[in-house]
Image (cartoon, rainbow, N blue to C red):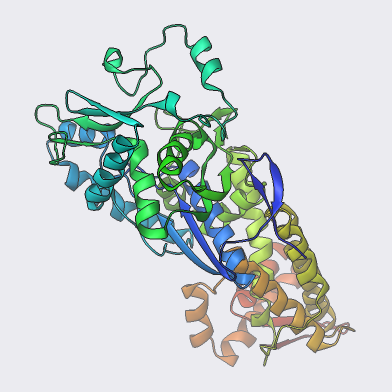
Length: 479
């Protein structure tokens, strides 16, 4: 089977072939650190974590870089409002990012470059653009001359002529002093310092980088002229990624990325979730409300990464219920004594179905269907063991099904552990305690108090005790 990826640049699925056999260079645009991450950010980094995990499962060594934008008007505005510094705000929300995203079982990147650590590389790239006639300086600002790049718009599908015709005198929101530019669509590479703002020395005077130049400089510095995968949210196609291409490719004369991947937005009632619209829910709000991190991953992965994902209370509840089903199957080994870890059997029809789904542009919805099919089989076997004390399926087959489920779930970053309370109960619950609880359950059943009987069964099941109700009315049990 061949992995195919939808390439935003070519607008079609293409077989994946990295530059170097067995090695993937991957860059994804990171957050601007002025606030807590919302669920839209969470979706992006769960998606790229999934892509990275799957590539590693397929045998690739992945060098994954994700930046932090720690210079930005939003950061400065937050610092001014708080009476703190840009550095204090950035450090606080970088720490918050790691706290939140690690709770979602997102693996750390290989590198997390910051803009403030790459000022020299940014200067170098801007100087090269000047020398080649793609950049010009005015009053301490430096702009990219868009009309000099004949391929401008190739990623987004926009032509400069159409953009100019449709502009109707619109002012570029990025740079108020638009009259200084040669063309309204020219964008800032370097911004002259304003009074009271943090600034860095440069060949053009004190100032700070424009937004787009930072990623071009960091990609080149850490990963080279051409990378295999460049990822980001769909809202970054234009202008950010379009401008990255313009900045990088006129210098290197090589493609910036072989595959451009973009995830769909998280929406609320059809509108993009964003801080500017005020309709966002932060990752930590959801987690602190008691939503299981794995349920959030399931919510994200149940839809194809390129499609919009609508956030509702009912959708989260549905994801929580789905996770309970999957978690029960992932912990199936706790129901059987001496459950063994076996080598994954190959060929394996479940693994083959999973890989076929993921090879089709990371179709996680179809891949999850394979996991739930396995979970359904394990639940059926578990019910037979509970109610009949046996099953016609060989134990080795059941063990292989469970092992396959755990293995494939880990590829999607879904992992279950027994909670600490259950572990503690299992340590202190004696055989006499178990017998007492079984007798209490028997008494409850005689009194037709089935709710209490079920509660006791669930209490015992949570610590790994399997009850077997026999035809003669007695109950046997085992770990």
